[in-house]
Amino acid sequence: MHNYTTAPELSDGYIGSVWEKLPRYVRPTLLLPAPSLSTELKCELTIASETFQHTGSFKFRAAYNLISSIEQQHVITASSGNFGQAVAYACKLLRKTCTIVMPATSARVKIEAIQAYGGTVDLIDVQQISREERVSQLMEANPGAFEAHAYDDYRVIAGNSTLGKDIFSAGEFDTVVVPIGGGGLSSGVIIARDLLQAQTAIIGAEPLPGNDAAQSLHNGRLISNAQEPDTIADGARTRSLGHINWEILQRGIKDIIEVPDRQTLRTVRSYFRYVNLKVEPTGALTLGALFSAPERFYGQRVCCIVSGGNVDPAVYAQALLEQD
Image 1 (cartoon, one colour):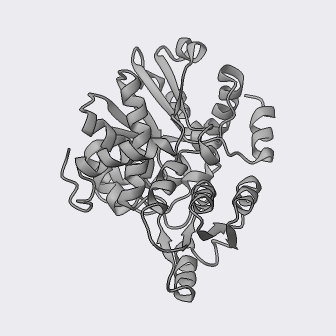
Image 2 (cartoon, rainbow, N blue to C red):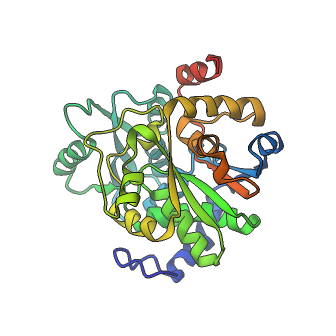
C-alpha cells in the first residue's frame, strides 16, 4: 500500500482487521448489471448500489466503524443527512447518544430519520454560521463528547474501504466511478484498490456547482469553495475535501468529472426508468458523469457507485416528472 503520511494508521494490517470485523454489521453492496444503459452508453455497465445499506447509504460503513472504536458516550457531528442518519443508528445500536448539526435546508426525510433513530437534530442557517462553527460551539458546551468527522478520519476511510472491497472482489473493472463530496468514499475505494492490487482507474463525479475537488486536482493544491455549495446533490455540499482525503485522492484518482445539476436530475430519472432503482441526487452523480462524457468510457467495463437512496420526496417527484 502507499505510505499515506498524514494517516499512518491506514496500514494494511488495520484495513485488514476492519475488513474482517465490519462485514458482520453491514450489508454487502448490491451489484446490478445495466444492459439497457450499457447499450446506450456503449460500455459494459455495472451499478454498485448502497441504497439498501443500513440507513440507506454507504455512510453506515464509516459511522459504525468509527463509533464502535471510541469510548465516549455522546457524539457530535455535522451532516447533510446521510452521515447523520448513520451516526444516529450506530449510536442506537451501541447505546450511545448523538447531536447532528444540519443545514435548515436539509431533506426532511433525512431529518426525520435521524430523529427516529433517537438522534438530536440541531438545524442552522449556513449563511449565518458554518457547520464547523456550530459543532465547535456544541463541543465547548459538551467537553466530554466526541467530535465525529464525516470524511477526514482514518476510521471513516477504512469503513468505506469495505465498499471498495465488495466491488473489487466481485469482478474486474476498467474504471470505477465514485461520487465526491468530502472525499471519504473515494479515499476508501482507492485504499481498497491499492490493497487488492487491482489495475482499475478511479474517476470521481462531482457536482459542477461545488467543484472544489476537481479544481484541487487540476491545480495540484487543496482548494475550498467560498461557501457551502448550492447544489441539488446535497450529500456533496462540502466546502472542501478533507486533508487525509486530499492526500489519498491526489495520488490515487485519475480524474474528476463535473456534473451539472440538471444532468444529475435527469440521471435520477434514468435510474428509475432503466434500473427500477430509487437514487438520491448525490448517488446519481456517477452515472451523470457517464452521460456528461460518454466518450471517456466507450468499450470499458465500468462500475458506477450509487452512494445512497435517501431522496426528499419533493425532489424525487420533480426529477421524475420533468421532461428532457
